[in-house]
Structures are given as structure tokens and as C-alpha cells.
Length: 130
Length: 138
Image (tube, rainbow over all chains, first blue to last red; front, side):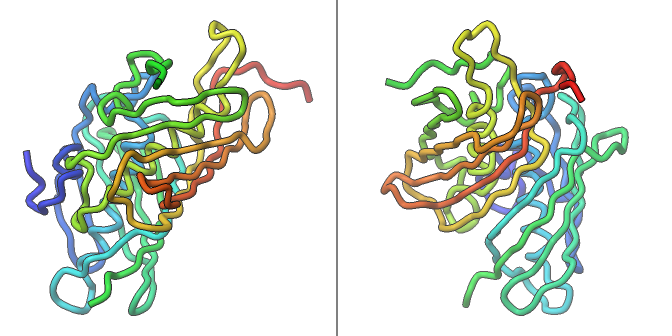
């Protein structure tokens, strides 16, 4: 399966972009057995990776300027609000909260299939130069 | 020589990535991860999610050491902060973490990640907790 974005790590994990635009992005990930931690739930690293991808996607679709804006994450903080399930679908919703010409701030919430919030993340991103 | 992965086989995500434990002792650990093409982001650098996983896992190990392996428990991460200092391309990545403080139930750990050239590419901090641990006396 490919994400259509040409990003190898998204394809490796099986991350799909459901929608992106206006400084927002919604992504989905089907949890596989290989994604589990020692407790049998989705690994925190997987959840952090999903958040990192989601905040990057939200920042890449500029609310004002047309076209994709490549970016890198400078910092990411994730709060694991409750244990993630070991199966089903995780949904990440990210939104740009502010920033300037070079740096932006993006929030992200990850929910399980039953709608429960399992993690929240906040990231600082920098737009690639040129 | 890398140790075999000392955590239960149920921890599948670290197996998927190929994380290895090189050095593990009281309050510290060093993990190693070979870089693969599947880890790349659009800039052809190692994706931040890979690095965040490495930091998360290392912080877990740093606080989980016990002399008696039968007494070992696995903590869960409450909060994880990662600073991506430089792009990583060349492996293997090496992640060293140390427990910085805390108590019997909740603890803190710091981690740093270096690339195959020994260049610092990321730092991280985590707050972790042993779930189901006996409550400390108040």
C-alpha cells in the first residue's frame, strides 16, 4: 500500500491521508500486530510517528498560499492520554494554530475507533527554504 | 555484541524497526538502530517518528533495569518531548538514555540520538510510570 505522498515511512506504517487543506489534516492508520507494544496496544512510538506525519501534512497545505510547503519538525511533545488499542483504526486530526513565514505551531489529536482521545501532540515546524 | 531484545516478543513495534539493545544497566541504556530505506521522509532523511520511537523505547529501558530480571516491570510513557536537532541520514543510529529522577512509580529520563558519524541529531525527555504499581505511602 502506498500513501500517494511518496514518503517511504508513511507507506511502511500504512498511514493514509483522508483530507488536508486550510492548515488542517486528517489521517488514518489501521493498527497491525507489528505495531503493538509489550502490553498489546499500539506502541507510543507509532502514535508519535502518526502525530509527526499529521502535523507535517497540516503545515504542508498552507491556508493562504497555494501549493505544498515542505517542512521539518523542530520539536514534538506527545501526551499519551490513555493506552491505545491493539487493533482497529487510529485517526489523527491536526491543525495549524499560528506562526509566521518560517515557523509554525501545530496541534494534533489522535482518537481510537470508538472516538476516545488516546494522545494529543503539539509541534513546532519549520518550512523548508527555497 | 548486541544483546537479544530483552522485552517480551509482544513488543512487536521495536522488532519491526529492528531496535537493538547494546548496553543496559541501572538507570541507563544504549540502543542501536540500522537505517533502512523504509524509514525515509520526503527529504530522504530518517523520519522523526522513527527517532521518537527510539527515544521513547530508550527512556523506558533506562528506568526499567533491575538486578533480578524476574522483578522487571515495563513502564508506560505519559509524556514524550523530542527535539529534532539535525537531519539523520547515515546509520546506525545510537540512542543513549538515562534516568534523571523520580520515584518508585513515576520517573523521568533524558535521551540523545546520534547518527552513524557520531553527530547529535535529536534529544528527548520523557515522563514514565509503572502501571499497577503499589501506591507509595502518603
